[in-house]
Length: 145
Image 1 (cartoon, one colour):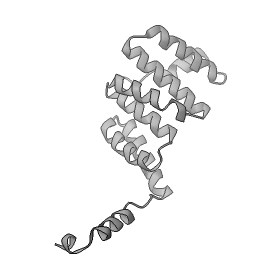
Image 2 (tube, one colour; image 1 turned 30 degrees about the horizontal axis):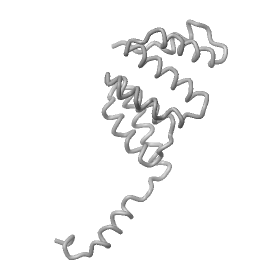
Image 3 (cartoon, one colour; image 1 turned 135 degrees about the horizontal axis):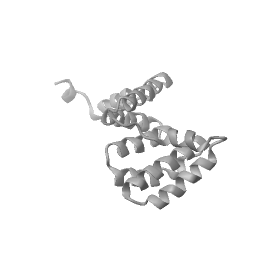
Image 4 (cartoon, helix red, strand yellow; image 1 turned 90 degrees about the vertical axis):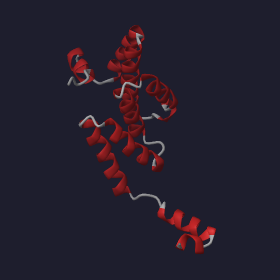
């Protein structure tokens, strides 16, 4: 009943104050939550945490790449490919670019473009400092159930 006795502007003002920006500690907790969910293969739960995190930090490149990985793991290859294309300009760090290449190659492999995926794997391997072929392939091998 209280909602009807207050003015519309009061309700909007209270909604804005409750949607105040999250503190860094809360954002760090969200990062841990999505990372743990990915480790335990709870991709839908990870996507929920990532969506909350990305509403507050739209350009967090690791969160964007984790979102692509979750969609890939859920076998939504076209959605992950489209999302990957849309975030390309937001990736700035070398580690982020390597992860981007890795995800692009994984998606291309699943879609069926194996020759393109091989070229991207080679490009990603050349970016990494002093790794042998076995070390690089071990980092790219997805975990099997």
